[in-house]
Length: 403
Image (cartoon, rainbow, N blue to C red; front, side):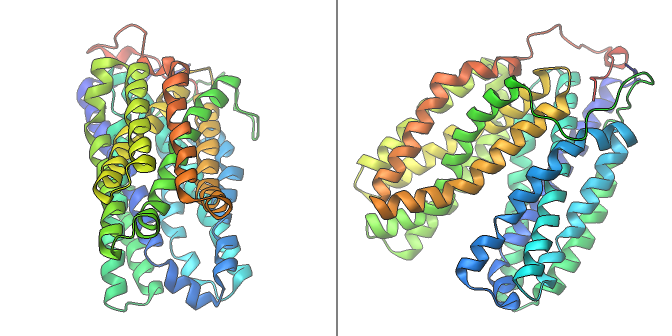
């Protein structure tokens, strides 16, 4: 296992650099999401066909994520992240070029694959940076992702309002984000494997610890996906509010999550990962109960805000715990990422299917139950409490984690 001389100044600079990487990654997602209607019209696909196509990003990510560790081992963490992030930013242009369903599915598969491998690489570097600083930063990094997504969404909304062709919009956005990403990668930690270190397998099942951690992340991401996609519908259909108020509920949920993530590191440092997730689960459960039983728009909106507040730090802590749970952090992080991506994929359709069979009230009853599971199973994130000796100012002498 090799060592690299990094003082605290360099590590702090690496923290800001990886935060910029997270923001760039989120901005790509926000830029894409706002132009989906244009892409659907350009490709000439129906709503059902679009739903099929939108499953391919998660499929591509699931297939590609296990490769991230091997790529990082082969090229080193900094070079690998630079290349993988550039693939992700440039892949933004592909969906808008697709003229039909087949090419759209292929484009979204590549788009998702590049998203997945860059996601694993940046989270692995985030965990290592957090280890060397010996304080929680993962929540803030995911908060920067949310901030980037909001910026990308705002730019995409403006482009759509101006009637800009999505191919032009995404080409410009990809160019800008690629340059910003490449510059940011200059200052991330340059982790290198030891000469005698064996490369990780191309494909391997995640360790049991990662599966358990991923299950906690599954509950949080399910609640996030359900609230993000169905909160406005819930207020409109169940509580008969105006479209504007319903949309404001979704915006409030998103902003609550972003703000909570940006300030969540202080909470984690103060109380530890396990207690933070338990309290988060209590808040999210309370929020779910208000949504299900409130019967008034103001109560339901408060409930969705509490859900966002409660689940905000859970996924960052899942990645942090996975990065410390075993001898192969990249493989564990890839396993957790795959499970959470799957949750984000199935949540909206599961909520819709259950609502059609019963009601949206019952659907959010399921969300409430999953939120309560965070309280029960928070202990599996014990690895996220960084219960090892302090790194201290002599970080230059700390050996790198095996990648």
